[in-house]
Image (cartoon, rainbow, N blue to C red; front, side, top):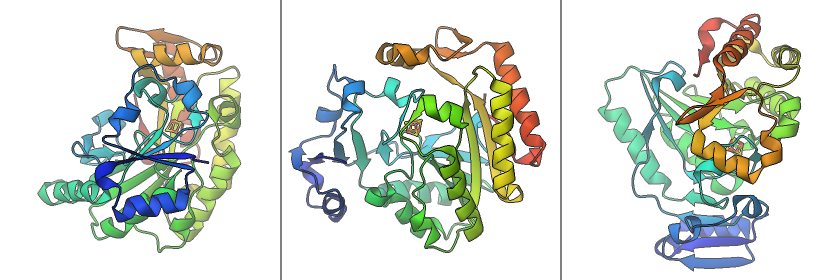
Length: 329
Ligand code: SF4
């Protein structure tokens, strides 16, 4: 799957680097000074690179944690997100990473202990009753777990902090390492899910809805806390019928009483990212109906966004307690 690994010279002899290289067994192993000299080169074609991305192993030096804006939380007193990776093995047409990053190559920052240190420092210095840490902003947090083993590392080291929630956000079904462990009460496995009608058009290479729901069922049966993330909700023809069937299927299949939290949010994106994606895939972006632009953002017209959020909120509340539902807007 991955033919080429670039490794920063200063980390090439570290155990983590060697472990990952042993698992991937690339045909080409190239040593570089700094990952940016490969990743940030101008005029790379994201679309072409996405067909065969290389993996870059690098060290991160700063900004391990970032603050989550209040309107994108699930009720924590303090909220931070972090990413041990850049980019993703999936290829969602609406993914903002295509607009934000110059390269489609994957980067794994292998100094996991520095992520852990930043999280632990935050826990120790904070007076908040509960702090939420969200993994997987610039990547899918579990899709490359068999290679990265980042989730396993974080679970092992953060289970001793009862006043935090650690969320792994994913569309993947890489859950075996979780099923082998006793569930941690402070960990939420949050699945991004969409109707198959949307997955088929926009979420290339991702597991289909039923596969994600089966992964959820297995995790629930094993006792793990599950989050459901309905974001972005895409407005489409037959929107109400498609999403009505979607919610009905989900809540009839999984244990709705044991859902930790849910979020809903309609599609929106910084304007410069959207422009870049429209140039990469003009044919697909046509499917985003009823969008509006201002100086900074692309988003649904207010009446459409209101309709989306109201319809989804009411549909979900038929099945699950509204106190578990958070609206991202
Ligand atoms: S799964 Fe998430 S990170 Fe990966 S391509 Fe899709 S939207 Fe982007």
